[in-house]
Image 1: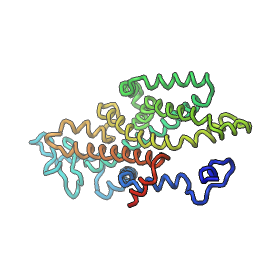
Image 2 (image 1 turned 180 degrees about the vertical axis):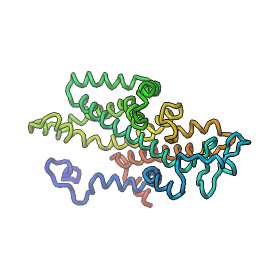
Image 3 (image 1 turned 90 degrees about the vertical axis):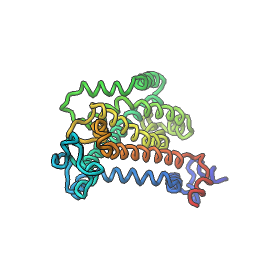
Image 4 (image 1 turned 60 degrees about the vertical axis):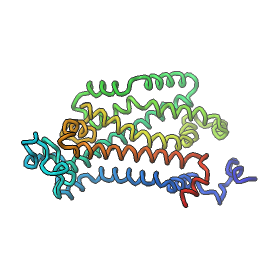
Length: 323
């Protein structure tokens, strides 16, 4: 019996010389230098967001205090000095018109931008997987009803719907939470469609038939047999969803439908910075550059995860990466 047959045989012991699939994927991911650099960037951004109060205390500033003495009234409130007022006390300068510390607002803004994006991604995953599994494993009637619901969700103009939802919800609802829920409401369809298609493919496998014959309930089969097979495609989709949701949050905040001042976010800072581009380009470059780098890091990481989890990725690629 070959190694592959021994692994596939029901009840067979895993081959001792074959590392677990997760370990193989991690080896491939480590061999991808671009993906590891992207992963380091993502970890750095998340760490900076979580440690925002500590970093602000280290700098000695906060995101809400005005420093009008650092502004030049003759230039319409632009920061004094070069590079937007950059100094030892203000590591990235100060905001025009207000004088608030840019570094403090950037790291606190990262909490909002990344928090909304990650929170929306988790909610999309919960809703989309539940609906997709129900459609793919719930029988013809359930599939017909839920598939129409998925198609209806995908047919709506997402951004316009998000703007409408943000406008009608009361102001008393916390804006970051509202943003995450609104982004989820307009974007869960992609997760559900992927889950449904994968579930339709996996439910014909022999181990699923064996579970049915053993008397397992459909819900148990969906969770114990189907869901583990969705791990790889869902991991790739999650890595792509986070940057897409960051763009959605930035776009809504840029249009004034996101978080409200004085709460900072990268999209809100970019919205304010557009009127100061000529007099203070640093105020545009800092949040815009960080948003670009973060989006690029998540995209490259998603591509690396896809390659690491793809069984068709050859061992020659791994050896080249190790060389």
